[in-house]
Structures are given as structure tokens and as C-alpha cells.
Amino acid sequence: MYWIKEKMKYNYLRIALLINIIVMLFTDTKKFLCNVNLKNIALFVEQFRRIHPSYLEYKIRRKIGSQNIKLFCNTAYNKKHNYFSIFRVVKQHKHVLVIDISVPAYDKNSSGLRMYTILNILNELGCKITFMAAELQPREPYVTELRAIGIEVICEMVDMEKYLRENGPSYDIVILSEPYPAFDYISLIRAYAVNSTVIYDTVDVHWLRIERAAAVTGDTKLLKEAEYIKKLELLNIKASDIVLTVTKDEKNYLHKLDSNLKIEVIPNIHEINNYEIKPFQSRNDLMFIGHFLHQPNVDAVKYFVKEILPLIKTQIPTIKFYIVGTNPTREVLNLRSDDVNVTGYVKDIAPYFENCRVFVAPLRFGAGMKGKIGQSMMYGLPVVTTTIGAEGMGLDDGRNVLIADNPENFAEAVLSLYSNEKLWTEISVSSMKHIDQNYSRECISLKLAELLGSLS
Image (cartoon, rainbow, N blue to C red; front, top):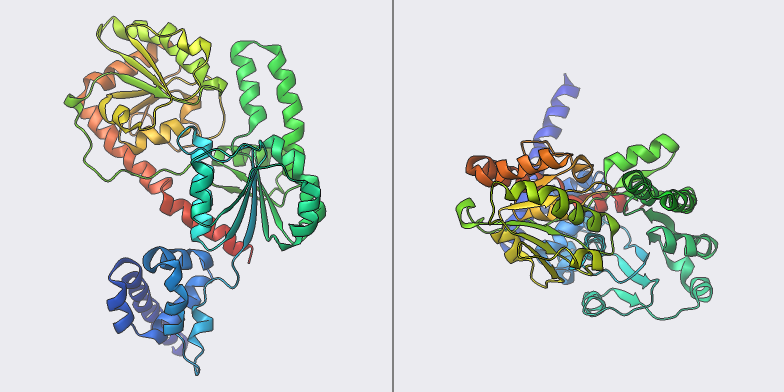
């Protein structure tokens, strides 16, 4: 009986403390500081930090600012009960080295946007970050923007062995992104960054994407390329402590190769736009967005223009197709016509997402999570895609996306969505909800905080 009473008492206390912390995180901070029961909040934090040690400090930093975190902690200090030591969520801030191909261009490709956002979140979580670009090009404005928030950016020639010999032991975490930079540096990282947890970020499983391209195009050279890059990627995976994938599908795929791998899923990150979605009747035309040095995007727009768009135009002769994105190749530029507009790089892409009626992503091969689909859903623009395009995102055909895998069915899906306002509205609302619940900055911040906490 005593045990039951004590357990009930503890549960009531936990609920009361949870209310206190919610008040702090989501209401007026000054009022909270004046009225909070510091003993209760300190005890709750002690319970909370066992589960999400870094995330709590992240929320506090976002609410009251990094410069006030020490002041707030000192407010909770009491010599008798030592609240400050209980309240201190993260015992030490991590020193993180990140190596990628290039400085992340958040407005030019989805992998750049993902890395840029990850760097910002790690910074907000209190990490001291050094970013190295393997290609040695100081891309602007991205370098200046990262440095402005306190991230050290190195994109000039460095004697890597000397640098790591001198600085390697100070790093707690090293993140290696993409196969080639990881392969180039992982041996030096292992030799000199002896105190670090090494994380390999796949971005997508490259050899799987190339194998699929070979199957679609019949290009046997691609099979040899896939075989070569598979060896690189597997070496990177085996030599790392933790592997990051962008989807659970790829996590499961790699676990089939080696069930002992420690794999975490850090997907693409999207922010829902908090404004009223432009209604169905005010929109027209179709769009696609992509980085055209990425072969799946080139294949997708060629496939759409040659095999699907003519079927759609038999029903809607005036419809236009906008191909938006950086580095359009000669093959893509050759698709231009009165009905097909190839824009190239566009600084402000919002007007396209806000004025087109349907987003098409007829991807026939690829891997990982398709950033273009998440981006369109983020804007509330309904998507028609393929099974490959929808892969790994937990999407349901007919609820938050339409899926079709041959030209006839794809054209039929586009026409259905284009002409049915009720269906369009339902998918628009459902797609935004899906992104907000699974791929928002808040969701991924929690995942990264949990990952950091596990390394404490």
C-alpha cells in the first residue's frame, strides 16, 4: 500500500512539474522566472534530462537566448539542494568537426539545405563547430552566413594530417558526409581524432541509386561504377561508429547487410510556411524542381516531357510545365518550348509553389529521401510521384500524395488532381500535416539532441 501511495505521489508530482516546464518553454519567460517553484522545476529537469538531455537546453536556448542560459541556471541555484547542478542539462558542449564536399548551398539542392539546417541546429544545441569543405571553394553567401552564427569554416588548402595531428584530439564528434570526402579522410580521422565518435552521413546510399539507374537506362558502365562506390561506402560504414541515413528504408537495407551497425535516421528538414495557402481556383500549370547535375532529375523531366505531358495536353491543351532548378544540362535546355519553361536557378522559388496547381516528380530511379517532394508538401502543393519518389517518406497514395509508375497512370493522376478541387484540398492539407509531424525542424532537433545525449 505504501508503495502504491508513493508511486501515485510521484506521478502527480511529475504531472505538476511537466506543467511547469511547459509554461517555461511556451509562455512568458519573465513571468515564469518570477513565479516558478524552483525546487519542482529542478527535480523535473533531473527526470527529463535522463531522456532528452540536450533537447531541453535547446528549447531553453531558443526561448531565452544563449546569452541568458547561465543567468537562468544561476537563478535556479540553491546551495542546500544544489539545484544548479541538477538543472544543468548538458555537462559539456561538444566540439564537432564536419567534413562535406562543399559549403552547403541551402537554396540550390536538398542535401545542401539538410546539411545547412543540421549545422544550425547543432549550433543552437551548444556545439562548437568546425566545418571543412573538401572542394576548397569559399561559396558565398553561405560561408559568411555560417561564420556569422559562430561556425568556423575552413575552405582553403589545409595540410590535413598536420591539422588533425594538432587539433584532432580536441574533437568529440566528427561527421563525414558523402562517400568520397569520407573515404579520403576517415583513416586520418581515426589516426588523430582519437577521442571522437565518428559519424558517417550517407545522404543517400549512392550505390543503390546508381544500380537503379543502370536498371532503367541499360547502361552497363553504371553497374561498374555502382560496384566501385559500394566498396567505398561499405568501408566508410565499417570504419565509423555511427551511420546516418535519411530514411528508415535505407536503415533497414543496410541492416540486412550487417545487423550490428549502429544506424540513426536524420531525414531532410522542412519548415511549414505559416500563411494561408492560395486556393485551387487561383492556380494553374505544373512544376518540377531539382539540381540538374543530379542524373535522376534529368531523367525525370525528359521522361515527363516526352511520355507524360503529351497525354495530359490531350485533355488540357493550354497547360504549361515549369522546370525550376540549378545547372540545367543541355538535355534539359533542349526540352524548352511554348509549353515547357526551363528557368534555371531561381532565388525566390516561393511564387512557383504558390501559383502552380500540381507538382510532378516522375522519378524512375534514385535513393534516399527526395527533398523536392518534401519541399512541395511543405508549401501545401499536392504531389504526383512514383514509388521511387515516395520511397522512405511514409506517404499514402490517395491521402497525402498520388503515386503512379507508368505514363498513362501518371497522366491520369495529374489530370484527376488538376481538375478535382476536393481531392486537391484534402491532399494539400494532409501533406502539410505529414511534413509538420515528421520532418519539421522541431522533430529533427529532438532527434539530434537525443543523438548528442547518447554520446554524453
